[in-house]
Amino acid sequence: MAKIIVVTSGKGGVGKTTSAAAIATGLALRGNKTIVIDFDVGLRNLDLIMGCERRVVYDLVNVIQGEATLNQAMIRDKRTENLFILPASQTRDKDALTPEGVEQVLNNLKDEFDYIICDSPAGIERGAQLAMYYADEAIVVTNPEVSSVRDSDRILGLLGSKTRLAEQGKEQVKEHLLITRYNPHRVDHGDMLNLNDITEILSIKLLGLIPESEAVLRASNQGVPVTHDDDSDAGQAYADTVSRLLGEDVPLRFHEAQKKSFLSRMFGGRR
Ligand SMILES: Nc1ncnc2c1ncn2[C@@H]1O[C@H](COP(=O)(O)OP(=O)(O)OP(=O)(O)O)[C@@H](O)[C@H]1O
Ligand SMILES: [Mg+2]
Picture: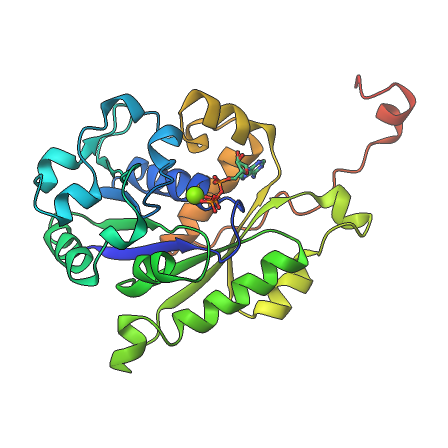
C-alpha cells in the first residue's frame, strides 16, 4: 500500500516542485516504486523539472473527467526505473479537480506504488487543500524568511484540521520540515532566519536542509532532478533527506558557513 506524501508550503516559489521532483527521484533510486503527481492545475511545472514536457499527452484532469485512463496519462521516467509522473493540466482551471476524482485516482494508484508524492500548488485555498486532503505525511517546505515561516505555520494548521486523517480523528498527518534555499553566510549576517529559529517557531521535526545552490537552477534548466547531480551540495542534501524519510539517521550538512582557512585567505582560495 502506497504512502501518500504531500509537498506543501503556503507561500509560493519556495521550492515545492523542485523538492517533489528531487525526493521522488531519490525514493525511486532507492528501489521504491514512486509516482509524483502535479496538483498545480493551470500552472504545471513538474513536467519541466522532470524533463518530460514533450511527452505529456493526457493529464490528471483528463483522468478525473474520464477522458483518459491512468495508464495513458502516467509518464514513465526515462532516467530512473520505478519512477512515474502524472502531469497537471495547463489549460483547465483549478475547479476541474474534485475530491471524489482525486480520491479515485489515489485509490487506483495505491496498490501499485510504494510512494505517491503530491506536488501542491501555492496558497491555502482549494487546490492546496485538495493536494493535502488524502495525505498520510506532509513535507512542509520553508525558506529561511519570516513570510515563508508564517505561511508554513498556517499550512500546519490546515494539516491538523482539513485532512481526511484529521477529520477521522484517529491519527495526525505526519509532518516533516524541509528548509530550502538555506544560505549560511546570509544567516550569519542576520539577513535570514537561522535553522534553530525556524525549527523553534514551527516545532515539527526537521527532515532536511537544502542549501541555496546553483545546481538547482542548472538541474531545472536541463530537466534533470538535482538528485542525479550527486557531486552537488543540493543533490547530496536531497539524498540525505530521502534517507531520513526512509527512517535512517543521517547527520545534518550544509547548515554552517565554510570558514576559509588561513592559507586560502592568504592565497585567494587556491589551496
Ligand atoms: N535550493 C535552491 N537553490 C537555489 N534555487 C532554488 C532552490 N530551490 C528552488 N530554487 C528555485 O526557486 C524557484 C522556485 O522553485 P519551485 O518552482 O520548486 O518552487 P514552488 O514552491 O514549487 O513554486 P510554486 O509555488 O510557484 O509552485 C525556481 O527558480 C527554483 O529553481
Ligand atoms: Mg510548484
